[in-house]
Length: 296
Image (cartoon, rainbow, N blue to C red):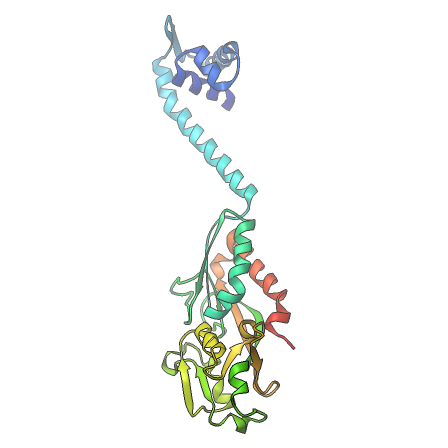
């Protein structure tokens, strides 16, 4: 059965007259009449009773109407699906990662991704704690520890460099630091030990056990601001501190660390278009930022 015939039937059922239906369809009224006649011939029964005031549905027409309306709804759904497909992947992707990496590195890049794909919505959870795929806290997790259990797709995203930094103001007002022994007596800024979410960030234990902490915070960006204010020394990611001309590396070569970000998502989600797009975008974008993440 020709959908076009049914579409004209629907227009006439709603409009009530050939002229009104023709106006809605942007055709001549004789075209509406011809389509109706062809449909009634296919079905083998009259669908409208012709009256002076227009066309009234017969019993057969009234029975056919809800079925054609259902077909119209299905056609519109197909059209919407095709439109969404033409615009690219759509839907929500929630990305969980560390505060510094999420805020400084990923946020501007993901903003670009959402501009390129208007149907895609991104939730960026940039938090100083570990997020769990198993608890559905995020769709993609970027973490410092490689997931070891569960049906999870895991890939190494990137290494990144951390370095001991101090502000120009702080370093100018204290004795030069040439060896690790020279770190004695200096004020340090670091994480709150009992709230540290991963052992991968226990970096000062590898360098020097501070005698005094000027400030401790769960936030790496707060630590950066404290160093910038001249409160003391801190190990910071190069992607946070290296672009700040007011901060200087301390003991370059000796107080330098490398850590790894791992990217993971549930294996069951790897075929979803929005997940494939976001995963590939993050992977490729981060690879293009290597001079920033791993400076010489």
